[in-house]
Amino acid sequence: METEDQQIERIKQFWNEHGKGIIAGLIVGFGLFYGWRYYDAQTRANQEEASQQFESILVQLEADQENSMTAAQDFVTSSDTTYAQLAALELAKYAVDNNDYATAISALQSVRDNAEPAIRAVADMRQARLLFAQEQYDAAMAAVQAAESVEAFKAQAAELKGDILLAQGDTTGARSAYQAALDAGAEGLAEIKLNSIVAGS
Image 1 (cartoon, rainbow, N blue to C red):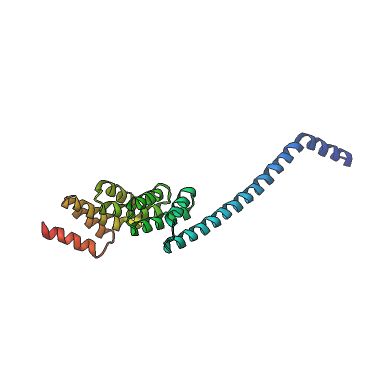
Image 2: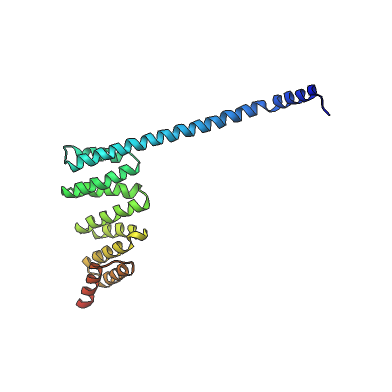
């Protein structure tokens, strides 16, 4: 059995061999821990700031304040947060209300390029409707097809696809699209549109 002096000597030897590694590991561990806490705090602070900016943009747009559109555009282009994407949707709505379709389409495109699938699908559908109203059928079709991948938008995407195809003179394609809309749970207008094609055939 080792004496106390021998045990102490073994501890010293172990520390001489491994002490630096243990200290380095502790430093790295503490660094990672506090670094993560700092990152988390910064992320929260950035989110809170973006939230406040978003609220400010909403107030400006709703009040139709001077330069509100510019302020919204600046926020949308300078932030990569979900709040910026929501602001882009509001900017698009404001632009449409003011007959500025180019700005609306651009704002919606920024959402389509950067947002999560559910928010992106909202922008897909809104942009598709705008493009359809301007008779840009190919671009409208591309946008509406992008929205189809999200289950919640299948019905309305299929119905809009039917509208686009019908406007292009493709009654067969429109009929299939309206039927797909009904199969996906669409009601009301989709059925009326489908029946009007069948009656006119």
